[in-house]
Amino acid sequence: ILIGFNNKTGGRNFLLVAFLLRAIFVIVDQYGLINLPDSYMDAAKFERIAVEFSRNQGIFIVSDFFIPDSLLISRIIAFFYSIFGESKMMAKCISLGLGVGSVYLVYKLSLILWDHSSAKKAAWITAIFPTLVLYSSITLRESYIVFFLLIGLIGIVKFMKENSLISYLQIVASFFILIFFHGPVAVGGFLFLLYLILQLSKKQLINIYHNKINLIAFFFIILSLIPLILLFTGSIKIPYLGSVKSLFFLDQYIVRINNYMYDTATYPSWLKINNSYEFFTKGVIKVFYFLYSPFIWDIKTPFHLLGLFDGTLYIMLTIYVIKNLNAIKENPLALVIIYLFIAYTIIYRLAVGNFGTGIRHR
Image (cartoon, rainbow, N blue to C red; front, top):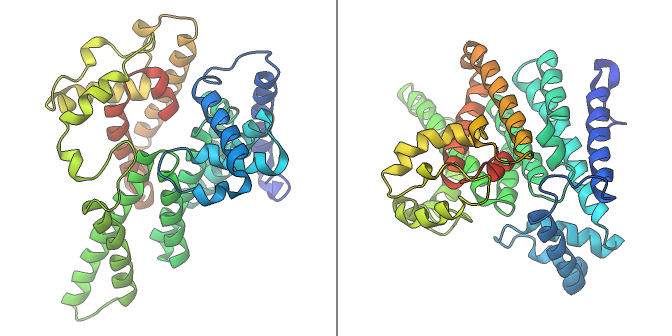
């Protein structure tokens, strides 16, 4: 990426900084100079499972890549282990590569949405944002998810501009892959297909009224209906969420959601969900907790101060978005991104019960 990037615009600078910061974090964690937050538990679990996959199946692990158990990260690492040998640093370096790649993708997405100046600002923020640096330096799913989600978002804005089949396939492929990292992230893909059907159908009705017809639009409507029909009939089930039908029975999620409220990083006890009605009443408060916690009154350990700093950065980003809301409203492509952001916030604020997990997901 660094070699291929045209440096006349200064793009290589933020990519180089992104690489160096993540490389330092990898080295610091690898040699035990500092134990990075979240570099144990889930990170150790994914790496341990990768070792098992590599030893048991070797390179043939690729045949199991698309098993919906949210362990695609371990299978990818296992594939590299089978070829090059087991190395925890190599596993972290895969995350590092995807993290640096995500900085470039943010630049590319912002360039399509706005202009070069805005794209550089977005890329620099992504390059040095502390939690993005952290999760691009350890063996967790976040760097993989961000990378493929950005590919999907670029596909969405390019399709809305060009209506090209390649962009459409890019959207479908990226969100399909995301199902196998963390199911709820794929919801964005289904929501966009629904939005696309409604928009194209509206235009088609206007065309029919004027005795015109757009066969390409009909093709994309039919193509988009297929995965949605499979989802609504229960043929496709999203990991962690289940089928669409199960979403109408919210009580089944209460115990699972409350079980996530544990450890010193837990949300306040009064945010526990007791019935389906509270999904909505307490859900409003949980939006703020998901996006900005921990707050000062939630601090119980010195490590929580890092979370407080992270939440403060998100508050600053929110203020920046609000200040530029009029410009966003005038950009239909940016609005679609905002709608998807709101949808993801609604989904994740329900499931998250502690700000440790919230920091990772947001």
